Amino acid sequence: MNTFIKPSQHALKTFSLQRCSISTSPIVYSWFVRLTNVTQVNTEAATPKHTRKRNYPLTYEQRQFPKLIGHTKTWNTFNTSNLRDGKRKAETVSDDLFLRQFIYGTWHSLFVSELIIKRRHNMIILSGLVTRTIHPRRMYFLIGYTEEILSALLKTPVKIEIQTVENKDEVIFTYW
Image 1 (spheres, one colour):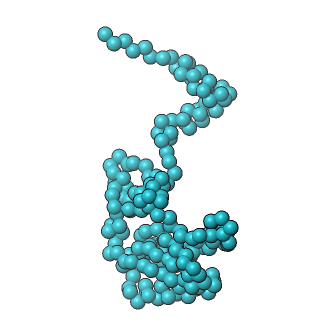
Image 2 (cartoon, helix red, strand yellow):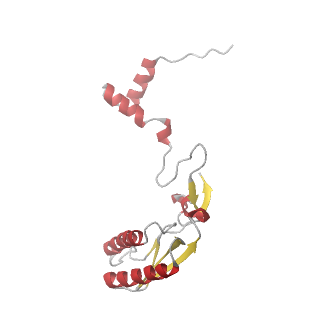
Image 3 (cartoon, one colour):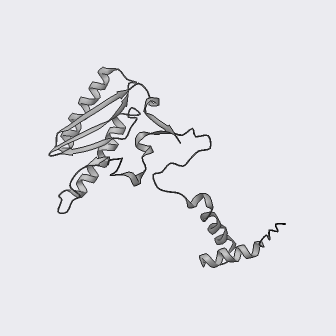
């Protein structure tokens, strides 16, 4: 016959408080219990959380977890200014932030993938996947407009390489 002895609530409370070595205030205790909940222990940055029905769509790039960068996934920004004795470190980071904001504002809800920024010598190359929801003439206008404005603002040649997909569902790799 199995007999399971249920520990008292007081014993669990004192054990938890002894481990965290915080005061015995009920507010602090409830805060501690909330933060040490089992569902919050196994969290990781940039990793999507599983859903019960597995209906959360992920692209191929989102499915590759951050620990795989350099093995099966590559960086979203290619530059060599972060190497030792590299020049324009801060300017490169601020330029990348500006480029992403400008592209996502100009190409509003057209990009279905991450924007990839490549720097080759003096040229900046932007690439990504775009939906075919607008007329091709407008897309060509957006390409030319973006290249000209960014080239004038950043004082370096900017080129945009895009590939089109019919809709966002074509980019879904798996459901999580």
